[in-house]
Length: 214
Image (cartoon, rainbow, N blue to C red; front, side):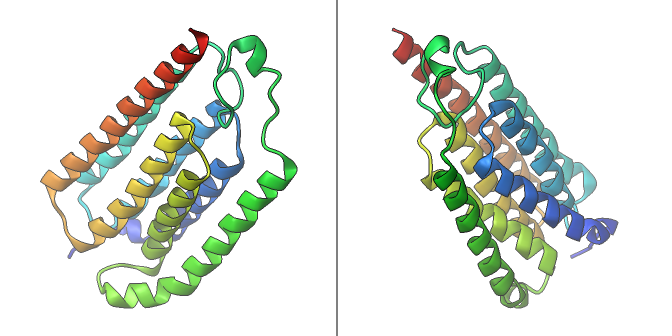
């Protein structure tokens, strides 16, 4: 399988997805969360583009940014979501009085994520041996996205957070798949899944706020 010049950007790409994934666990403001998600897709694009042709790899980046834009549009048009995203949606006057994560919850998330990252770095060399076509940095980036995405998914029931966690987990799978096979059809299908998750998440976020307000 042909490897492009993006292999020299593999380490910055892995570090980018590591940083954004950990920050997504701790940040409360939805604007910052979605900005981090958009930046995370840049790192995913770099890791995917190591094996996929530029045009196919760009479908991941474009689909991710469109999905982020859909979420931004849905959330910005929803009353009462001016600040955090981990709280139960309430009317705007009530929502502003709700505190963010407690110190203990924040510490728990960071420590759990740090332990997962340590496990990932321990498992990455062996995993890279199992898949000859994949690089160490790709394994690190993919496993971090998969594991932290699942962790994120288990810590929240808020629609926006759930969608972000699912998109993060899907990105980790795509990095591993890109190292195994180049398929235009699968790349297109994964882009459709990404957009579908964003549309579903936007719908449930608006619907959940509507139920509370009625």
